[in-house]
Length: 162
Figure: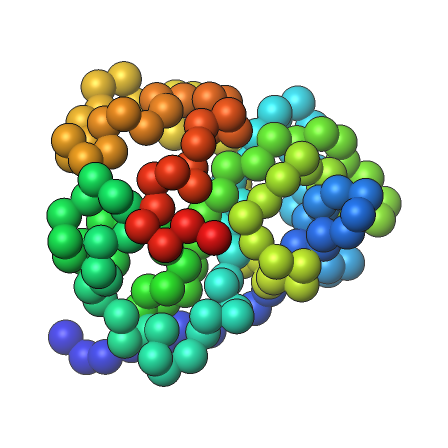
């Protein structure tokens, strides 16, 4: 099998301000928003552009990022944006959509202002939710549901918490 490269162009950008967060969709992709109303969540696929460099892309293993994790973890066992391809996925609640301006208003996203959006996908429980899930012992005490993550003390989980 030969080496392949891929070209990805942003469909929009994350916008963050004192007023909150939104996903700004470029004019040529705004028609793709049609039918999104009624979905309470979207999976936001974004490019961690601030970490897109040779050094970050070479990371395949990291020292213990979480206090209860093993001493070393493969990068595919983390949600870190530091990885061979800096692709990140964040579920986001849809507060409202301004179709004319191409703005999807969301309460929060773990991406910086100006972060390129690769794609959006509506959250469907029938394809995105799995009934029987197992995780390693070191993270079993983490919240089982997205909604509970907001009140969980994540800072206490990380070895190098800010």
